[in-house]
Image (cartoon, rainbow, N blue to C red; front, side, top):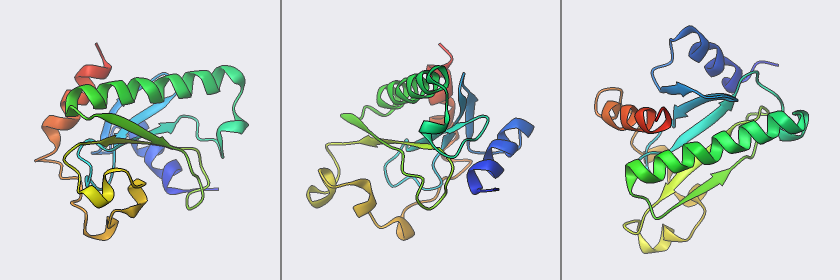
Length: 144
């Protein structure tokens, strides 16, 4: 099966994905397509698997540790108050972890709501030029 996750991992391997932050032990850290919460990232496993339970214990440990490490970098770079982590796989049946920074400055009606309550269709898209400094800062944090 080829999903958008498979396609993006292939692009990361080729060095051709503009949202790629860096290679991690278990896969690729990438910026989210939209940045309604500035610093939203994903962790894509390499190789791609259908879900977390398809991994060995060692692979799971590595993936979950990388996910938390990505969250550490995002929280430090963005000054978020916390990170929300989600692995759904319903629309794209391939493992990927969402890493969402959460902020005190979010609208009151959304501050404690799931991120899916945001209007994703009107969210600002990742911009290679204006978001490059953020991407580079997260990369630097991950590689130190």
